[in-house]
Image 1: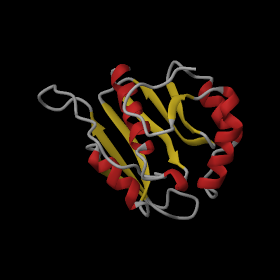
Image 2: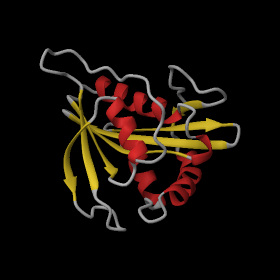
Image 3: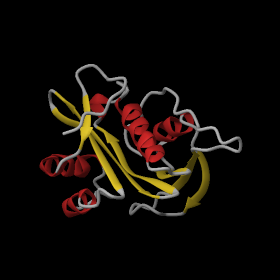
Image 4: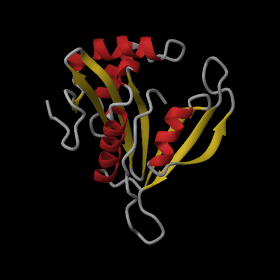
Length: 175
């Protein structure tokens, strides 16, 4: 189990997700995204591809309180999922998870990080904008309940070749 270094929320550890974490993460997924929840097997499938994936969990004294995942196939990285249980929002956990995913994308030499966020989730959109993500497209009625998905992109290498700054923000809850 590898802990993720960096600024920590009090009492929370961010570490790599393991197969043993999948049942708890899946239960949170069902709770947080009841309409669009991933099936249990999808998490196992994602973890079986470490050459292109990285998944993290945020663990507190109450168990897993957040999780996030990234797929990276150079030159594009995609945030697959990011979630924090509502009782733990506002503690910097979402920021820490997103920062870790962006750092992983840089490590894997991605030029851009893409993600989809619900059009009706302004809190998540605000987090992503603070990190420098810009909306580049809309997928109409993308989610099962008919809500649009906003496609957002963070360019890691700008026109001058400098890497984008991840910034410091509050977390988003669910994308």
